[in-house]
Image 1 (spheres, rainbow, N blue to C red):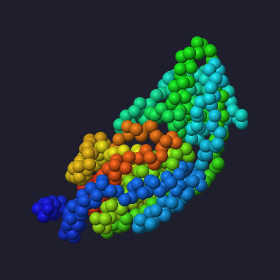
Image 2: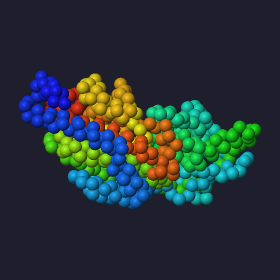
Image 3: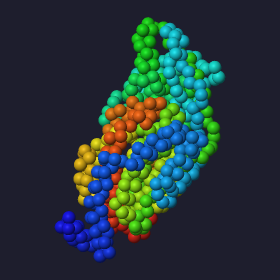
Image 4: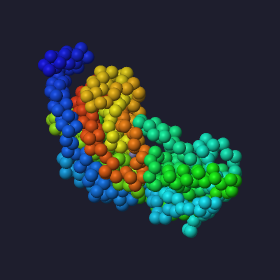
Length: 478
Ligand code: ZN
Ligand code: ZN
């Protein structure tokens, strides 16, 4: 222990640091021992993350962006952070254009095999006429097939896009399957379709549509867009196989609407560090959810993990740097909170950012964007969390949705990749409830985050490069 300290002090001298920094080095060294103890204690008995996600899912429930429900979620989170001793707790407001799903969502195949199907509107969908609309359905296996359809070929038709999603541990297939939801309705509308229906972007077989946002390019008229549950979508595809050339017709009725400008907000809180001039460590998540679920996996757990890590680090003594939690608002509907946070704070450099927004299953891989510029810190972080079953990686971290400010500042980013094998069973469905969280895996997340946040919060040099912090940082990060 003492030997390690001497080596570390010597290396600081060779780097040209001045004597006062040695005091920090000493605290850092002695803190590491208790940090390991605190992280391991969290692995056995986390006091915070579960309490947060249980509380917000029970007392608030679904938190659709821009609505009164999201505002209640923010008020709840402000109270929770205050009760747990965070400093500088605030709800930083911003305006947004708000969409609400309505209360009518019906789909029925009317011929040749008449039966009801389970549908929900996609975010930003416009309403059908009251009483619904009926049209022939045109089948597209993939988004590329839809793209290849001639202009005008969908006049008066409903486009159906299958574009099956596959399960993957890193969630990478979302990148393939997502466009069915993100862009298919825009493409179909541009080719004359009166509405678009997709197979849910998901990997489960419950009779629950997976919702999420869609959109239309400039100049393309928005049309009604909905997602069928996977069993219903598969039933529809079997109908195409058995139709023998007969047209398949569907009636859909949806009544979502845009309600204009309302307020959302970003909730923040801090564990204030000993040296406020050092750029803070930002631990991010998002607090809003879609209307159809209480958002336990997406992303109540993420906020619980971030807050728990900050509180655990504080148990080892006041950190050198400030740790700030950012519970972003209105992520689901277009990253409005992340954008607003970056715009408001772009001139305040952040030392490093991490986000938790991929459920509550275990962290399995560590990535940073400073492995080459600060290999010592990268290696120390990777080494410290190897005990929790986290693999090191050469993949360059790019950060989650709520880390716009780090990307805008060109700052240091860490990705603690979670096992997403079952994430898309639950994602944006009514099944995203508290009981789906495995407390053992949630605690592993807290242990890993505690260790990483604790090491970062006690780094005296630039996290990005390992060198000294620039004395007067302008708009760029470290
Ligand atoms: Zn999310
Ligand atoms: Zn989401």
